[in-house]
Length: 208
Image (cartoon, rainbow, N blue to C red; front, side, top):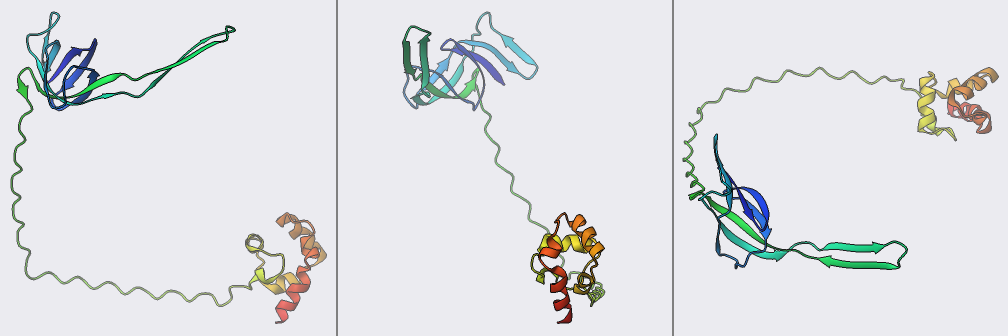
């Protein structure tokens, strides 16, 4: 059930249990208030419309009286050197709707006690033994050399070299001038291989 009431020059659609702030009323916290300007009451498919109001009322309880947030008001006149700033805080009364048309909220039914859970079977089926997992394949013995030991070769370059199939010091030690030109272009680091002496470093590391 809901109702449309009018108070303070404004209309509000309310149901029992609603809390709303209306224009300030001359009441105290905890007082009972009767809103008699009821414009409409709806209950399911049944709707009563007043002409202009109904003979029924809406009951409410005063929760608090207060003041709203400050509103800033600025008046400015162009080219008149006139500017005025003021503020306003609107008073309000907070209400809680307790009854509509003499009908209050229905009392909540006490929750039915939960049924006791059926006792579990004493003997539980033994869990089936898990299938033995196959042993993991041994890691490849030849995983390549740690190319990051070469000065100037970081993780990014190592990844790019691996993408070109270069994973050992010996491969770098065997670079020809054509290989260096081609790989420089692939890595987009022009001159780094010769500048950082990768071939010399790789040769020494391959021996060790």
